[in-house]
Length: 198
Image (cartoon, rainbow, N blue to C red; front, side, top):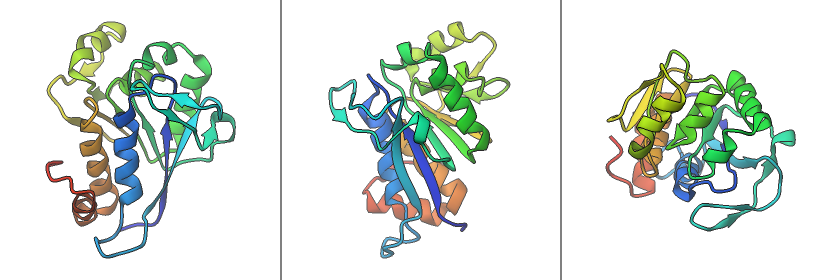
C-alpha cells in the first residue's frame, strides 16, 4: 500500500448525479480496513466556476474549487450526463482536463465523460468504453477510437473509462484495487455494502 492521494471529481451543469457521486463515495470511504478510521484519499469537487451546479437529475451541488484554483490531483474523475454534449465544446474545460491528466496518476471517466477525454486527446491509441446508448455516437464523433461496447470498465494504463452510471462505482473500486490492493477495495466495498463490483 502506498500513501494518501487526492481525487478531483469534475462536475458541470447537466452532470449525471451518480456518475460523480458514486466514485466520490467510494474514494472518500477508502480505508486500510473496515475497522480503520484512516482515510486513504482526500476527495473534492471542481467545476468551471464556484457557482452552484444543477445536475441532470436535478440536484444542486456547490463545487469545492473552480478550475482556476483547483489543486493538483493524483486521480481525476470525469463523469458524464447530458451536460457533456455542451461541455465537449468548451475549450478551456477541455484544456484543463488535458493539463490535469498530464500530471495525474490516473484519469478516469464515467459514462459519457469519455467524450470529454476523447476531445482532450486522452483516448487516442487507447481502448475505451462509455454508456451503451452512446457507443455508436462516440465512434462516430471520434473515428478510429477503439470503443469496447460490452466492457464495464477499460484499463488503458493512465486512463480508465467506464460504462454508464453504476459502472462508475465498479470502476472506482477497481482503481482502489490497482492503487492500494484488493484488500483495500474489498474493505471499501464492504463498508459501503456494495457486493458486486468484480
